[in-house]
Image (tube, rainbow, N blue to C red; front, side, top):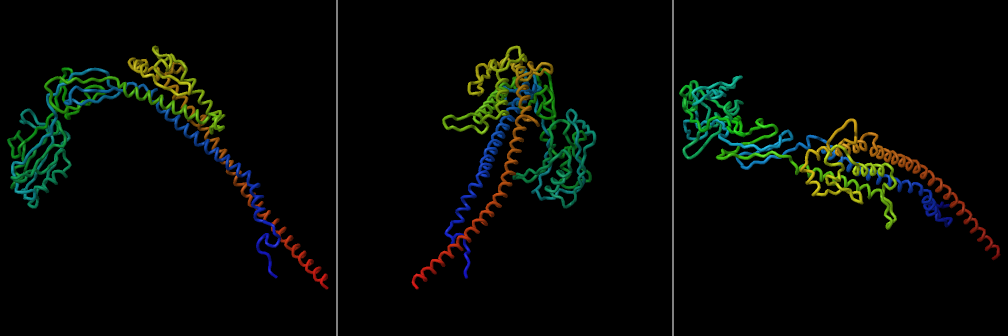
Amino acid sequence: MATISSAGIGSGLDVASIVSQLMAIERQPKTDLATAATKIQTQISEVGKITSAVSKLRDLSSKLSSSTFWQQTTASSSSTAVAVTSSSSALAANYSVEVQQLASSQSLLAGQTFTSSTAAVGTGTLTLEMGTWGTGQTTFASRAPAATASITIDGTDTVETLRDKINAAGLGVSASILTDASGSRLVMRSKETGEINGFRVSVAGGTGGLTSLGFDPSTGVTGATQKTAAANSKATVDGVGVTSASNTLADVLDGVSMTLTALTTAPVSVKVAGDTETIKKTLQDFATAYTDLAKLISTDTKYDAAAKKAGPLQGDGSIIGMQSRLRSLLSASSTASTAFKTMSDAGFEQQRDGSLTVNATKLDKALANLPQLKALFSNTNLTDVNNDGFGRRFRNIADDLLNTGGALTSRTSGLNDKLQRNQKSQDALEQRLVMTQKRLETQYGALDTKIASLNGLSTYVTQQISQWNKA
């Protein structure tokens, strides 16, 4: 006798549908947990955005609280003959600069022209020695400690291999080949400019073209021709003569570096002043960062009456408390500056929507009084917080929010813990749902079998009665 292999076939019951509908009811608590998890994840994301915005505000506040930031300077020159840069250690001032001589490196051109760069150069020993030439190159003072290189040249060496051996010697001299219609000549040049980077060349046992490379005017050896001499740059700054081995004057004025590019026929005016443009931009960036944070908090905590929808962080005490602290500080007063009592005095105006705008006229006026504006933001007082600058006070609030145990880090940690508990609850509920489904399938399967059996018996009895009636 065949058996019923699919629930409901013998009984007429839609067992699969019944179990599915019952399980939908059983799964509702897990669905609610999943919906809650999505909300928590959204809250974590929004708190992360706020944390990032506070971090940006802290970075700008930290910059404004630094005294060195307010000492930034900018430098300008009236001529391209003198390029100038300045740092925070420079003092605002005007200087007059004249350039009498540019620094140069020594260069020598070999006395012999070879037929090509692969021509043999002869044999012998070439010695290079670094040092300083005296007046008229009548004397030569070797560098201490000694900087010399002796190079052995044999019959297989060419102009090219001689060049390579000089460059491989590791001395302060480089070699190259100059080729024109007349042939190839070796050029030697000191790698650095300045009088201390002069060099002389001596040849021992030289044969062939190698003898044309010697150069030592102090002893009458001039096989090679000097094209440029090693020389220092020479200039005057406010009438005071200065020299340098290079064309950069980095140590003449505190915090000022000048690069000499050409001789001058008239004084060049160099001006160093406070870099108010950089300071102004940073102050504007601070206002923008505060506004971005304020708008983000407002959006996350508001209730949209028209859409009947609450922001993901509406009623969140940590975020609302942070918002209150920032607004209170923005409207607070300070004794840090004698010229400006509040941030509004310097042009920072809080709007009704919580944003912060900059009054350009007020700010420009404040920048004209840079020492007092600096005090308003960077002043430090260890005994009276009211005497601290606003840059420092905003940075302290941001640190308090972002540090371990701070409102934002604690809120993020709490939400993550909540999400983990939610997931554990979902996992546990899923296990119970699996067991419930198996139980329902077993129960309704048994009911299906029983009803099918009864239906079969009913059919048999009906058939018997029909036979009796016929008889």
